[in-house]
Amino acid sequence: MSTSSFNLFAFSGKMKILHLSWMAFFITFMVWFNFAPLLQAVKETLGLTTEQVKTLLILNVAITIPARVIVGSLTDKYGPKIVYSALLVLCSVPCFVFAFSENFVQAAIARFALGFIGAGFVIGIRLVSEWFPHNELGTAEGIYGGWGNFGSAAAAFTLPTVALLLGGDEGWRYAMALTGIVSLIFGFIFYFNVSDTPKGSTYFRPANLTAMEVTSKSDFFLLLVMKLPMYAALALLAWKLSPANISMISINATYTLYASLVLLYLYELSQVWKVNKSIFKQPVEEIHQYKFKQVAVLNILYFATFGSELAVVSMLPLFFSETFSLSPVVAGMVAASYAFMNLISRPGGGWISDKCGRKPTLLILTAGLALGYLLMAQITSEWTLWLAVAGAMACSFFVQAGEGAVFATVPLIKRRMTGQIAGMTGAYGNVGAVVYLTVLSFVSYQTFFYVISATAVVGFATLILMEEPKGQMAEINQDGSVTLIDVASQ
Image (cartoon, rainbow, N blue to C red; front, side):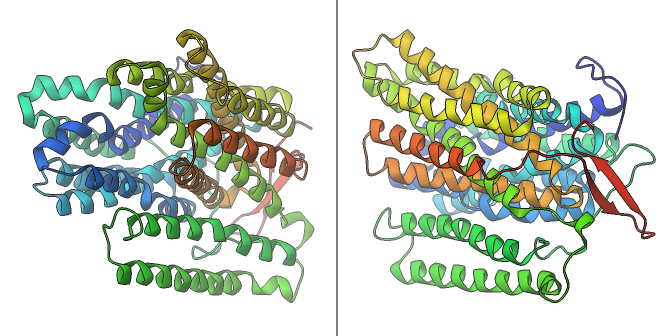
């Protein structure tokens, strides 16, 4: 890792890597969320029903859950440079297909495939961790996540204007295609300007790509348990598409999907056993052990933080519109204040984590998250609008700062598996969004906020089990020697 000073205005060494990384993440989110701000135009041009539009929104996030796990593994194996570049280039294709689709089926296939670009986040987590020391890692990861995540807000504010400038009723096609062009070009820029590690450093790779390694028997079973919610969320998505809800697929197709998910879980169970069966015969040396409970705690916290952010960003315009009788445009602008906080909150969470410790920071931010959503549950039409907006922004600070603190900790667990760990934790964020939005379809806005607050309390309780990263982690070089990597100040 680089030992040069942390200068946000520099564009060389590790700072160049940080800036190119958040730019790549920014573009992936801009492409991933280019549909929502142009939704009405797409609906009218393609003659879609409201149910078909809802289906496209579901398909947009459906594949991201397994994609983040897959892309995380590929990153650990092949390196961030190749994987990020390939993702940006390849995902421009379904972006173009969607932009020039002529019917619902074409749009649905393209939107489903585009969900893969939402996995780009986990690649940068590994790349940034290779370049920054532990005492700067939280700040760097926070800037990467916060500034990159702003790509969705940038799309919401710029694409409608771009569509108008580029041409009438069909302008949305060119606006979307433009995001694909940016993704395609930046894929090559990224490839020719980034390296996986600083010169002279080793890029540690996992021994296995098919499943995550664990280092104890109890962790083996905990890993299997933590896999279940991801499959459950995918089953929930299948249920949403079934005749019981929006009827996009038949009942037979629904049962086929359920059966496929069961088979996939059993297959993954076999791969986890194949990779880890040796721990039942011979204990792993203490120097090479890591505690999977650290990963499990971070998964639950990201479920509550990023999961709630995705869900709340989706419903907040409608919430403000109905509560304060605002026009859709004004409600959208007011609700955007929640997302705008990403620019400061997520880097802030990482910075606080660097200065005050990982666990204490997470405890404070998770408590604030629970109280923040408890506050939002109290918002009614009797509140003044500015006070409601202030409450939403205060809540969003704890949500997004919590996300920054989570990923300030992820790279400190096991370096060679950072992509896999980030992929699983990131996937839990999408699982949270699916669960929360499903809950919202059955309950009032107030109850929705209470549910998120309750899950934050659960996250706070699990944090008691987390251990503050300390000392060093050990990684094995190709020649068999051991490298010790600092995870905390001595």
